[in-house]
Image (cartoon, rainbow, N blue to C red):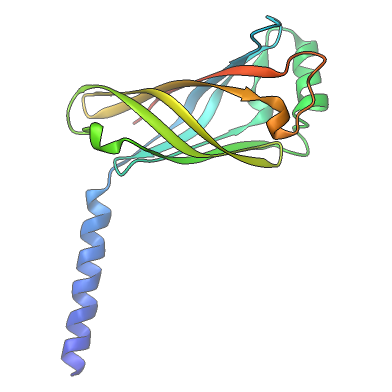
Amino acid sequence: MKQIKVLAIIVTFLFIGQQAEAQKIFGTRNGRITFESPTDGDVKAVNNEVTSRIADNGQLTFSLLMKGFKFKLAEMQEHFNDQYAESTKFPRADFKGTIANLKEVNFSKDGSYKVSVKGDLTMHGVTKNVTVNGILEIKGGKPAARGSFVINLKDFKIDASSVTEKVDVEVSCQYQ
């Protein structure tokens, strides 16, 4: 009886180990996220310090410091961090989601794949479900992702109505 329990434990660990090895995880610490107001060209910033991970099981995460956004005008950066994003109070933005159409992506074959990513975006203390359409390109066994979407700032309790109500967001990551 004791031998059966030991054998069951060993088989379980082997099965878990095989599953862990089967999943490939790619990451980057220098992903790029930009945003721009469609109504005010001065509201434009870029963050090149985005941490992201993507796994061949479709899991996708992004994390960034709000203070990492850089503006052309120093005054805009100060207003963004102090008045709108409240970056001291809400220092991070995070996304956790999955590729909804994972069956259409082959991580082991070079190519360009249209993807739909669904998940939760947390920003300014508010979490909202979002869907982002984009492209996942596999080249030499390594993925690169890019996508775009619109954020309605009111949805995240950010009152920037004196400047803009929405921003166009673009995401770009080259994974290792």
